[in-house]
Amino acid sequence: MKMPPEYIHAQENMTPGKITADGFLGNDMRPLVDIIEADEERLASLALTFEGIAERLEFLSEEGRKGLGDAITVEGKWLVQVNEARGFLPCPFEDGIFRKITTVVTYIRGNQRIMYSDLSLHLLKAHHFLEGKGSSFRLEPEELAKILGPKKL
Image (tube, rainbow, N blue to C red; front, side):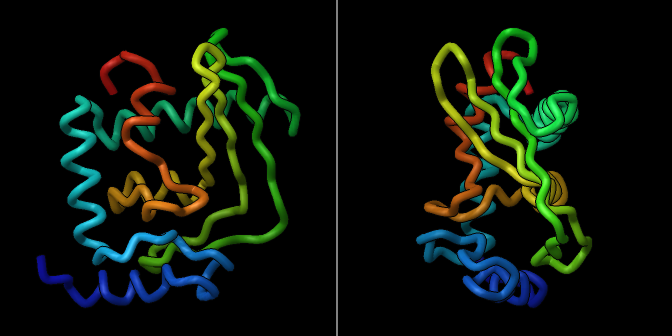
């Protein structure tokens, strides 16, 4: 698929050193639109929606903030820790600036873990971007399905 100019510019902003040291693409060499399209198809095949995932991840972050930096158990299923660093990160699509807040969620039963930031949530909701394969903050569709549970999201 041909990339519109705003996606070309966003992908340039996602390269290492532009916004973050490691960038947003990991070792994924595909065009941004192909990464997004593949993740949209994979989530649909898992009966997951971007809106449902975002809602659940936002809930977990809100609950985790109650731990004031310490990990807390949420609903007996997840161990959640929220950490805040000084500063802000701009969205590579240039439509917002987000605090450096990172949430780590561990699914207790399966000992699986995901890590996401406030910027990650924005990228998921607004742009359907889960980051490139190999990225530190990549949200793999299969991992989301396992960690967030069987509830249709």
